[in-house]
Length: 108
Image 1 (cartoon, one colour):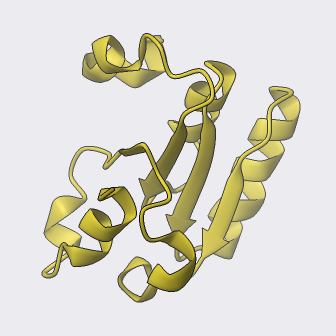
Image 2 (image 1 turned 90 degrees about the vertical axis):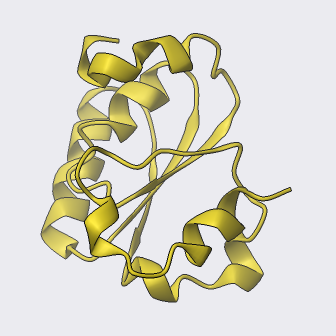
């Protein structure tokens, strides 16, 4: 829970929830969420971050999903309405001039 810092209170009961983590980088948030029982999918542009995040997850005895590519080009036919929570880590909103991909992942 300490890894989630100020957002701990929002993740008290996430067992079985599907969480998207855009710009999830090296898994420093995704792995703790997976340890709490969530099914986490990272969207990030870095293959190196993917390798690190998957290794971190394996060492933590959890699994995460990792999609390498531009989040603004995510296939909404696959991911639209697929997540219970979209967790945007602090400081990433300025990367997106168009927030529709984020909203489409979450809308139900």
